[in-house]
Image (cartoon, rainbow, N blue to C red; front, side, top):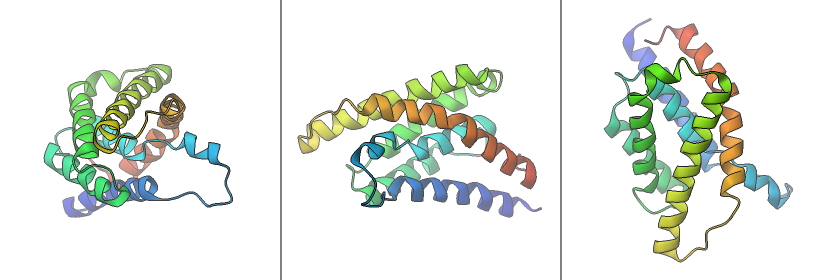
Amino acid sequence: MNNLFRVMIVALSILIGMLFTAGYLPRVMPDWVGWLRPEWMLLVCFFWAVEIPERLGLVSVWLCGTLVDVLIGDSIGTNGACLALVSLIGWKLHARVRLYSPAQAVLLIFFLSLGVLCIKALIDNLVNDVSIAPTLIVQAISTGFLWIPISRVLGRVKMRFGIR
């Protein structure tokens, strides 16, 4: 398989993460299900930052995050900066994260997502005067627990298409 096809597979996984982030739950779902909404882009970008740190650029992650800001109506640059920070942490820790046990990886993702959610809530509070909700912790927990299935699915995609 050529290199362009591999790049398209990574871009497709990031696009799917964007769609999951921007998607809405059906109206028949109870309100509390929205509290469990994970940070899909954080999971996808962190996975690719750990697995192929030399291929995923900081500018491309920032642009994807800015596109997510446009899609969901956040302040421009908020998701871009947060995803760039998460990817930078993934690049710096990529050798260690590969050796982490699943429990350690879940804890790392929990704290990363909690930090990102707090930064986004603080910016939303300062810019739009929206109160900070305590549901951030539940959202961070659901993001942490989704790390294992997402990393396994994306790991299989990486192996299947020979992404290096």
